[in-house]
Image (tube, rainbow, N blue to C red; front, side):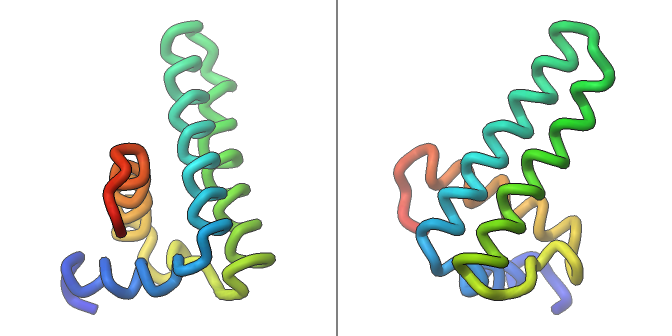
Length: 96
């Protein structure tokens, strides 16, 4: 894949299962919460919770519900961007 525009449909195809998408949403919410808490409380160790929560929930979704390998392994930056795009669409109630 040569562009994010090509990657996005692939990313959506890897996230067809609603439970997997919900786990992504929970993980991203927790990751953002850990990052915000780290900033507000001046607790650098809370930053460690961000990737653990974010990736932990997502990988559980892929392993047990989607039954595929996370796109993070092949395209980490596009995958991160796509996760935030999916998160925002879910938060706003938009269809994927």
